[in-house]
Length: 321
Image 1 (cartoon, one colour):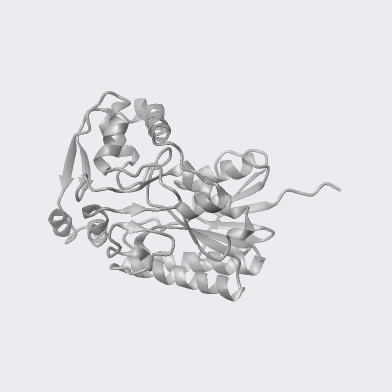
Image 2 (image 1 turned 120 degrees about the vertical axis):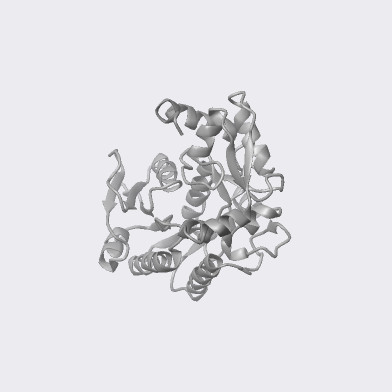
């Protein structure tokens, strides 16, 4: 008797969720994407669900029948995490637990804080120095405790700042910045652009999630996505600019300016506490995923070329950026 393919539910159809869906569909799995906005294009094996994660019954229905659940959600606004991130994360955790599904959570690096000498490994202690970091630590500790107790199966996957196709909201290599770079205009950067800074390629994040999501022996711990770019912020922008024969003209935004802007702007105020990530070396190590599963990041030149091609595809419509 033919066995039906497993169903994998993805919460979030943003910078990573859509890439993840493609990886899972290519493996012959059934994929259910859950998002706030309208459904995307239909295709065999793919189902779209639209709803509010603050409704426990909706979250439970979205996980029903799923073997694996991926939490790739982020609050809509960067400045109101405390009001929105906590209930969303716990709603997904409760729904996955009720469904008896494995839960794979996509996380950032905020929980580590600044006191790591610029290098973060999978066993680096969480020592946050920001409200967002404290919140991420709380969520991570809750998840790890649930994994350890057997209440829930799954793991946490952490990535550094994104670059690559679809990274429209990335801090540095977002679509607006790269459109300006392609047009020969100056681009804004924070902190010291010559410090080492890991940037994780968005398709690699999706591949890493699918890797651990389809391997139960990955459960119970934190994994880091090996980063395609381990140089500087300036180096990344220069490498992308070279694809268009454009020099990278950087305009540094000082932290004092953000602090001043924060008097009126909640977004600027929220960004100030995370500036430590851009003033010192900020390097993510992901050897465990390579050692355990043979996972390798996309070669940097290939990732840079694909990032430039992504902007090329949209540039005629967005040249006024």
